[in-house]
Amino acid sequence: MALTSWKTFNFFDVSQVKPPDDGENAAVFDVRYPYVNPNDLSCICTGSNNIFLGSNDGYVRILSQAFKLIRSFKAHEIGSITHMKQVEDTSLLVTIAEDLSNEPILKVWALDKTEKKTGIPKCQSTLSIQNG
Image (cartoon, rainbow, N blue to C red; front, side, top):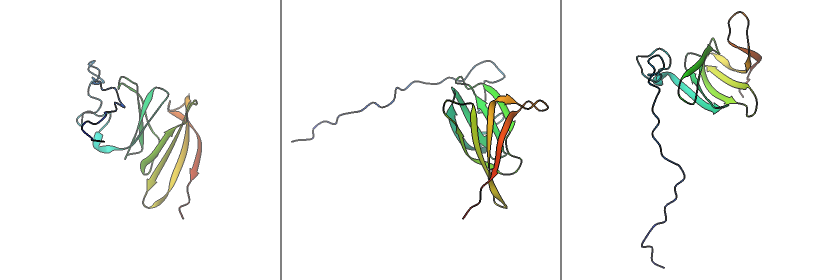
């Protein structure tokens, strides 16, 4: 059997995504813009029709499908967010932050509940992870 032609498989529908053109959120990934510095991102995940960005400074930024900033909050005081997962069919977000001088910290956030004083999502649980 001669291999004269290859069969192609189209796994993805390609379409160009245009960022919003409303001034405030138009440059959400622009380095000069204060919301998200692409060089500072350490992890990303999706869920609940949102995009969750974790950064080296411990912040979680939640973007809509249109790349508009919905919420930003300081998830970890020390360390870089290295892992993040939005639990499917819930409003829970799990983050892990690491710092070389400390043990990794796992936090579970309830995105549908907020702290009265700060307005950030309520931290449901904090756990220190023992390596080795």
